[in-house]
Image (cartoon, rainbow, N blue to C red; front, side, top):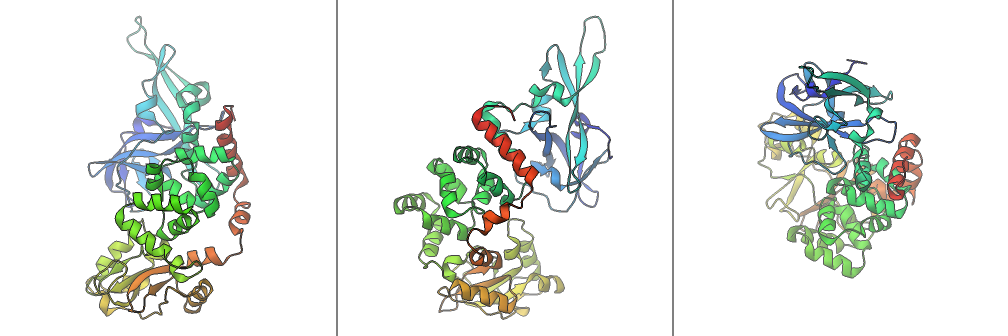
Length: 429
């Protein structure tokens, strides 16, 4: 449908199709985010009903949108309930039937757009209807989106929320590059506007000193909600940088189980494997089947480096576990029958102790070409694992993140920085 318009009223009745073209739900609404003056508001995603749940489908996951429906690029569907966020506008809820003078918005036209690297949908036209006592049928006229800017205005108080929504599709590493270019006050406002998971992803891409400045304005409840979304090893690094009193207050407010894990990680000396590892890995018993392991690996919440292998131990299955038995890699799982028990396809890769230095950890991963290495205590109980991405983060020269961000897309950074800075000054971009 290149170059064609598709109307929101029609979109909100289309089926949601999986990658094979089978209907798995229905689109209910279109989520857009305000843009800078003169730039079309962009479609962030769609609200859909699937399996009796109202869910959000990111526009980047839609492969095609036409009269047959909205077809997903992949087979995965995030069934978490949809929750409207500040700064986002729902066309069906917020725009359709709204008044523009003596006229009413009857429909909104979307058009496909792109920059050669990615494609998206944006607002193109607004259809207004006018009813008259002298005419049985209403009259209609089409306007460009910028002729009725009030329909998609975020308002001064929610400009930062709109900016947070605009950044939501960017990789956290690129968002960190944008954030570093903002004044400290703007960073704090952006942190307050972001949802917990997105802010946690951003914090993991910043040095600990900048993480502390970013969250210092958050109240304790919000801070705990954000910190609990972080990876354990990144959270341990952040807590280690906090003043002792603040760290104690946060640990006391955390979930008991998470707090115990953090205290255990904080007990290891800096620069050792124990301080670098994460206990949040895939662990199963020897009688678990290949099918069960693949079901765990499919969970999109796992990092790629974590989902590359399943660690097999005797009960208990939470670190510190029972006796460590071995590891089964994802490729091996794909080659074996679903009913095979993991105990029959183990690989005996070397493990390390928590007191090993970071440099020795890097050498061990490189020597055996591993994406992750298990960490065991003297009793051969699995304590966690260290992934290659965390090792790279520690072994690269100081300041590599700042230098890397200089190479991020200039247009994206400039656009986001300009609009975010505008929010703090009250002006227009």
